[in-house]
Amino acid sequence: MSNTFYESAGQNWFTLDNVYIHYNWTHEATFNATDVYAPSTNSYHCQHVSSLQKYDTLLVPSANTDHAAHWHITFTDFQIQAFTVHSSKFAAASDCATFFTPAILMGLITSLILLLVLAYALHMVVHLKHIDRYEEHKTTVYFPRNTEAESTEKNNL
Image: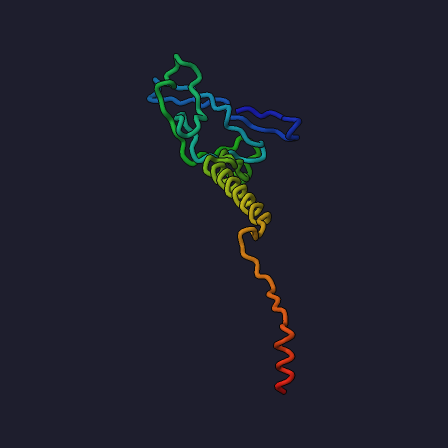
């Protein structure tokens, strides 16, 4: 493990440089694990630290001539803290899971597409115009009064 101060972050970060595995005192495998890092005041937690590609390959064989190329190793619920350990408990964990997992990314893209469709639909509804070209207009009917009919009416009274 190494401990390095980064000015941009303003604090020390630890890095797990290598993982050495000894099997039956005769076989040794060395993996590079430089993607395992966290602030020195925190611990590092990851659901899977593995040499398998389906778990994001955080453990990479150090050399092709090493026995590590023939091994597939997975640590489940892995947590490590290099420095500032107090009362034999882990500090707050810096998790390896990223915020933009494929599921979250697809959900955001789908929401964006639906939002664009809704905006287009609202735009079309707002700009609707009443079509009155083909409708028959009701006009006021004017009936001229017949003066003859009026005079006969008055005489009858």
